[in-house]
Image 1: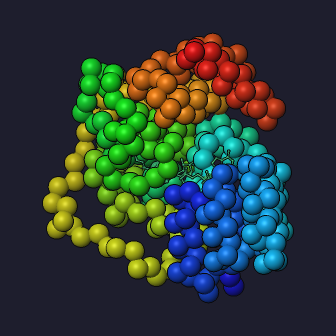
Image 2: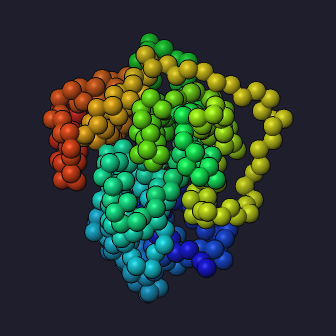
Length: 383
Ligand SMILES: NC(=O)C1=CN([C@@H]2O[C@H](COP(=O)(O)OP(=O)(O)OC[C@H]3O[C@@H](n4cnc5c(N)ncnc54)[C@H](OP(=O)(O)O)[C@@H]3O)[C@@H](O)[C@H]2O)C=CC1
Ligand SMILES: CC(=O)[C@@H](O)[C@H](O)COP(=O)(O)O
Ligand SMILES: [Mn+2]
């Protein structure tokens, strides 16, 4: 039986790699829907190649262009957030791959969960913002959430076959990013060009900046809490510059299981789309002799303060992680426009966590309000 897939964010780094997996396995997957926000040209190209039934362009100004290109091919074209929500809940779809970036993933993911879909979740921001709500809804609507993020896929793979054996802790590995080992004096003047050079992974701009500031690892700590039902003290972060061990689980008997491989997102994407099966792939294989030393060190949380903020947000609960996420989305976007320095990103996040009204038991509307308010406050602080 083929699995029918809807990809939210098909033009990005995860989305294009997911399409490579689908192209390599035409007997396993049927592509129902794809979406982009701005990149109409690539979206049209993908639609012509893969012939999905539905295409969504987020930016409504580009609707005419996409419609004109695809109308004669019998492909339905929608625009905006309502279009995204539609392809998250189409009845024939088995798996919704959330490969879009940022808070924009929240609403369509809620809709996909409420439609009982299996979610292949790359969009970690959704779980950071509203992990409690999403996991409760997933239980209520019998929706399965499968991690795509490499660390969480690694943990999930380590847990598969353990039949609920209790976890003592998980060990999330971090590359340390392009600025590993650098001090604050160096970081004061770094620009986006340097921050966008990730040592091991080729990813979208937002997550690449997050990796450089260790916010990516902070978001992943929160993501892990909700995916695996952990307490903050059960989550360790260790810097592993080679990104070969993608993460580890330590069980109550002291045994540690690790999942390893070359840094290539196609594997976790494919695993989420074929779970519980593993299918043959031609991805390059890891050779131990090419990596004679795998090394580990403690993260520098004094210099890279975002990791500490994430643990704080996790412990505080409520809407605090939503505040953290919204402030981070603003500072990353401003850093990419050269309007704020690298270290100032953490200063703004800290101030937002201090200033924005705390809500201990937020609902969806509260999250939306918190996100809006935090963005405004973050921009005020910057200006
Ligand atoms: N890249 C990676 O290796 C990894 C990524 N992730 C996570 O996966 C998600 C995607 O990351 P990545 O692929 O790198 O990101 P990219 O920036 O490469 O791609 C983002 C995708 O989302 C679309 N998009 C952007 N903004 C919006 C919006 N407001 N509404 C709807 N769609 C939007 C983009 O469309 P357009 O192209 O038109 O702008 C594009 O298709 C992120 O949450 C990231 O943290 C997790 C692990 C690894
Ligand atoms: C590929 C992936 O999952 C990214 O989240 C990656 O892990 C980023 O690397 P670091 O945040 O460890 O630098
Ligand atoms: Mn990751």
